[in-house]
Image 1 (tube, rainbow, N blue to C red):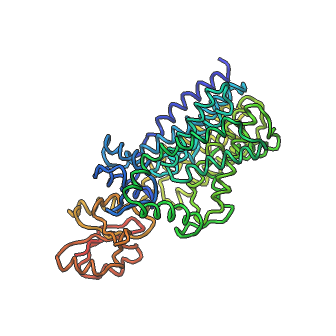
Image 2: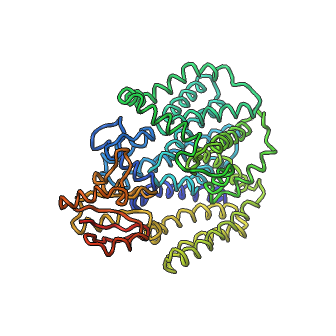
Image 3: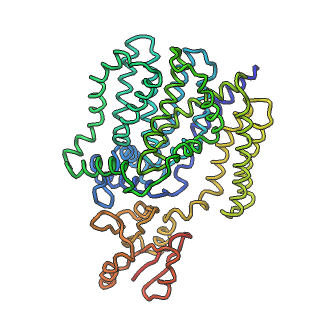
Length: 537
């Protein structure tokens, strides 16, 4: 069997493993961080009310984000029940659909330009990208808008390469449909990114859009608005100015123009984030951007059009969000698909013997550093067992060694992708729960439930850990502003509860435990290394 045929079959089997892997272990870890548990709780409240229009959190309207993720979670809750797996199922599907968009675009270019094995490598590289995997395993809006944007812009590029006017019009219709879905996925950014990328593309090529593209604005714009109006129409009709002010003015314009939401970062933040999101394929992205000097920026062929469009797709969102007053890593996740397209082409070149091997060597050194660094961190900081830390580090060390010294580029590429899959599966089964213990209150609330406290109201902490909002469903105490109430902020609530002989659960920082241990009417339930759960009576 020819080596390239064998590699193709191995890659196909590996892709099947990745397809299953994207759904593996979604419910093993608790919901984490400030966003994931809140979004899941918003969806649960909508689900329990049978309300697909008004997002609420703790009974208060929650107009921070649009409805598409919530609808995915509601559908999963209805089919599979309310738990972590259901909350993350929609994002996992969006991750796979993003891979599908990248593969479809690469396949189109491959078929027209004869770039053998481009689509195959695009699928493999995308499926094994740590940035895409990480966001696909969490219940957030970033992967949803990445998916809709990827399909929108993939449709647009393919319309540029269409063989006839009918196909071009159908692909443009697909573009506008996905722009409409992008508006439902994350608000105005769903139209800003596609519009800005396409404008940047034509500027870089120093050409005007053709007449059919310009005319498509007349029917495509209304089509996108019609699709997005399935939610925006009813919610504006129902809530009027309150929704417009909170959703558009506060969470779009104020978030972009100010540091109101306390996420400042330096101007160079996003290029660094992109390099991290692209792991373990980062050296290939650097190589692709270096090769940009050789592109024919005004070339009419499919490959140069794809390269220039991918560069515009990278450039515009990074520049746009770099000037935002609020910066979070997930904001530029929609630039990962074009990065993966450029990476995949460089990987394809090396695999078929047409490119320099230096990215493989650098990639090998990078994997070795990650493996050895992970081993040291696991033993010294996370205090994992030697066996667990070794099992996590081993795949990266092996893949790094093969990438650095193997003469077979296909072997090095395959081992890199496989190492990502193996490492994450091992992490989920032997280390993840230990690593995230401090980041969730799920187990503390389960301890309280075991003591018969499952019905007590809960005073949470106004911190980055918002997990009580999901795991103490309907019991968290909120203030008039819709924010959670902490025990030290509302002594009157504690005093009133004690007068009624009502017990309360409260979270406190672990460093404050000494102030409560000696007080009467305080029972310590447990701690997670960051917060302590106490019962007040």
